[in-house]
Image (tube, rainbow, N blue to C red):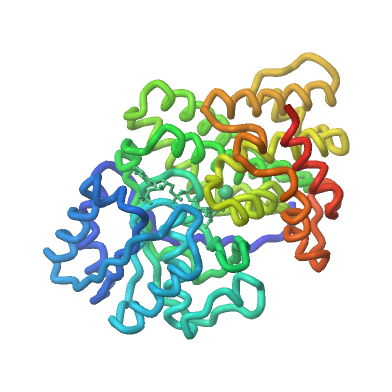
Length: 391
Ligand code: NZQ
Ligand code: ZN
């Protein structure tokens, strides 16, 4: 096990109806003016917007609403939010929604204290030294952004989607009421299941040995997520499945399963190129396409962890280590299909001609070194994209 520093300061309010306490919770911190940041309107349709604004009114807390964060949120939209925060004297940015609203809120909170300019941080040119606090009311179990240090944003002008980590991104508090996810379309629930699995798998499949505790937590997160995904296919309003999935999502990306090892979230890096260049691609759907192809490309170099997953998740015990590993990868693919996810590039309408451009961008036109099980240049990434496009 490697040395590590672990820091997850987010206070979690978890459970049925907890979101109704938003006014009282905000007041307990002493905030006076809140920006409510949300997405395309699902929270208005569900009535959550009304509940939140009334709860703030009841405690005499001023607020300003700023909606319109789109799935795969954009920098130009977040920049408008930064300016509103400065003009209005906002002291807390409250994201109400999924990962997109939350990540957009994180950019807004940093930008409001850094000259309304956060792209330089996303490009790893400097780091923020101050930010407004961020809080969340989560409506989609998927990204783990409600506890994570990352924020991912798309610069539409450049067609680049980039994430960066900062302790300023860790929400001060997150409210997680699983019943808020009942209204999700099945496709979004499935995207969330895949994303949660991927945050866990990307850490688990790193080469570091002797991380027994992190491995076993990861296996529990994976088993729970797969089970919840199966239950929700039949019963979208099963509270226990929604609750377990939601907490699994937070644990998948608050680094509980990553501590003590070195890892690179390689399928995420590939997927961010896909949804950066093709914003209609949902993050989880992109991962469902690229992960099986990546796994097929590298498993023979390090079959042991793939084989162990095949055994513990899918009950595959017959055959050599390599055979089990391969059957396990096919089982992931079959599960994604069962959830209604695409598993090939052409299903996402990503044309073959774009593979080279995405590959070049992924390694920063050869300025970045990427290594996860094997090293990646343009050729390797293009090979993986091609494998993901096979009929
Ligand atoms: O925009 P609204 O109208 O709210 O609708 C959303 C959106 O259309 C809808 N939705 C959310 N909650 C709902 C709901 N519809 C009905 N009922 C509800 N309760 O679902 C759609 C997708 O929402 P979005 O927030 O885009 O999805 P997700 O949570 O998957 O977030 C994806 C973004 O997060 C990034 C992704 O790259 C992508 O940009 N990620 C962020 C991470 C982080 N900050 O730690 C890590 C992840 O790996 C990921 O990269
Ligand atoms: Zn993800």
